Image 1 (cartoon, helix red, strand yellow):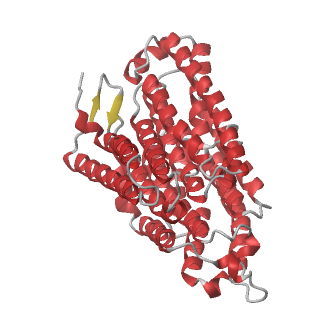
Image 2: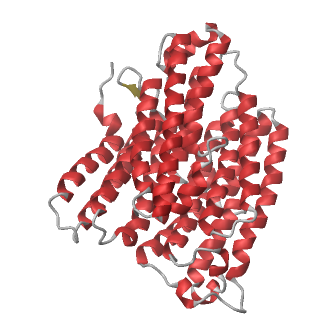
Length: 473
């Protein structure tokens, strides 16, 4: 039993900062709680440094009776999550500055971030469920942080669906345990091929239901538009980005490590879910006028493309690195768009962005990069991510799914252009109040995220090498 705690330093850094921040915040004056934000940022930087050290020394291992794996996918996922969490923290500064519950905000953000990191490396069904709870429960509170009617309704829907699918996931864990007589992925890999087909299939569907909820995929997507619209914008940026990273990498590890040799035909149902998710997300986004709801449906469609990699988990070696690269590019691009929405708190509809190019050319440039990036336009990172995932899908024998994804990509250009076109309108611009900016932190986050999206697209060949390496069991 490997009990090397240093292997879990990124997770320990976030949880330790959460505990210290909660204690310190109880002693700090309500109007001077900014040190907790600094502590949260320092925890993320510590985790990034620890991950870089692990990658440099090639310390791949499993710890605590193989319950947690530290490998190429874990390291890449940690970099994505911690980098994205830093952007969310920076984006949130003006939103929560002076708030009487500022400490609680940072603590909840750190805790749900730690849960997301645990999802990424979970190598045991019980660890997976514990990570699901740690990633979910603080996020429910964050959704209602504003304590207004839309936020309360959003948090209630988020909680009820999360609780339902959490129980479903736990039932699936029990079924897989009954089928394979183990919860460790290593042992299930050996026992599930001889287990009853029906028991294995139903258990897998139930466990995946919880992970699809985290990712916001059909049919567990109903919470996404309401939470995105009702929660504070930085929280909306968080819930549409980081849980997807944890849920999708966790799903990939589960499928790749436990079901590679079983007779359960899970790639086809996953391919169908991917097809329905991308199509529904795009169709629902077509006529949205609220920018946050439009981005919500955009994230649902993006999950459809990402699920293609999960469907190909055991069919091609390209699946893992294409998934990890796409997640990195998506995180930067999506957070860039949300940072602009955060920076313009009074611009809630597409028409509120009319004439933005004349008043704020920098923010307009970020929106152009991020929205066209979400379509998959070169030279942004998502372009290369989609290219890799489409290639992996064809290589895995699902050409029809790749063709449908290309058609959806073309169709998505319509609703992104509905947002981009008003930016350059010279006649009847939106009132100046709609273009009032929030502050420097949100703007800086927007520029940083857009730059990262472009850098990933331009240096994709080097970055893709990070996704190489076998998963540990």
